[in-house]
Length: 59
Image (cartoon, rainbow, N blue to C red):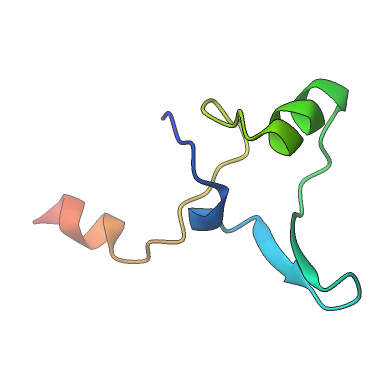
């Protein structure tokens, strides 16, 4: 699955301490560069936060 919007990912959460959104995954150096530059089209850690996706698929 190709995705380019971190804001729609379950791993992209608000950090109260830093007061900003961050990715919870342990990114290696290459993945971190992609994350920081916005080149996340092929993120291997993407998890949709669309709870109804499975239900729509079953219909």
